[in-house]
Image 1 (cartoon, rainbow, N blue to C red):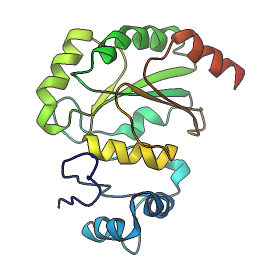
Image 2 (cartoon, helix red, strand yellow; image 1 turned 180 degrees about the horizontal axis):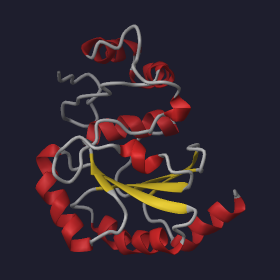
Image 3 (cartoon, rainbow, N blue to C red; image 1 turned 180 degrees about the vertical axis):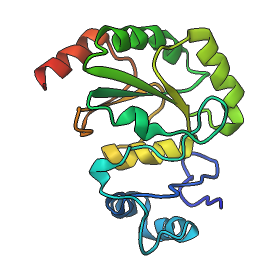
Image 4 (cartoon, one colour; image 1 turned 45 degrees about the horizontal axis):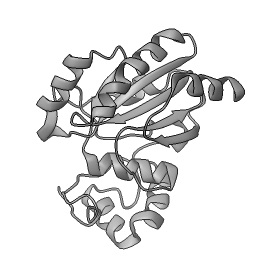
Length: 199
């Protein structure tokens, strides 16, 4: 089921959370409007009982695909007991390509306590573009494909800030607590200094 009520700024239709923690549903209502959210929730039969446990046990992103366009299990990569940097990227983003080897190096350098997960916002229609990007830059970290509007709403719910573009980064503690959000370039040294000072 498609809804257009949350896509004024994204200019496309969106399929939002097939299952969402109750806390996220309540928070989303304040951010995207309760009347719009009620349509989304009702459309997925979530109005009474969202079908996910506590938000602390949930992965922060929903409805992602793997590089073959199949539904993907983001939670298995996210819930790992390590610091996790989520890189949101797009195939047409030049800076995203420049940052790919930096993030691969960071992912490998501290694999004992840190990992990177990539999320492309190219969506199902841009799957071929996302795969060309992945083949060209060969990141060593796992990557998923999401719809721009869905990822942007996820981002806004978590950060209480609008999604500004790619690349954007979200840093989560080993307990899956959002610790930092950064649009634009990020340096490996600054990233590791932040982790070390908050560990």
